[in-house]
Image 1 (cartoon, one colour):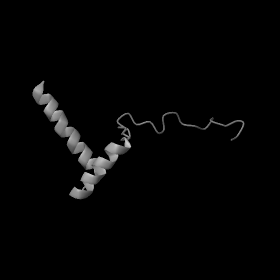
Image 2 (image 1 turned 135 degrees about the horizontal axis):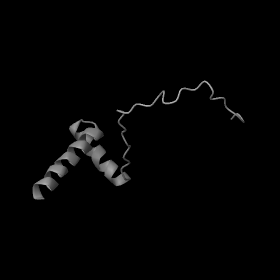
Image 3 (image 1 turned 120 degrees about the horizontal axis):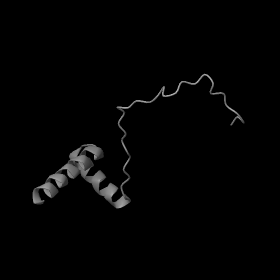
Image 4 (image 1 turned 180 degrees about the vertical axis):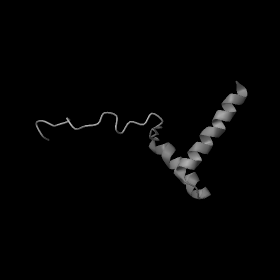
Length: 66
């Protein structure tokens, strides 16, 4: 690492995008991960699709009883 950097030619906000969306990783505990991997493999679908489907169904269930 340099002792000093020259930012005199830098452009402020060059990589800023106000409409950017961020996707946060979610880490599953090993037992939950194994459970979903097994089901996803049996259904021949991606784990992410399975987890999202499961979460959407649970959201609908929760909303229906509120």
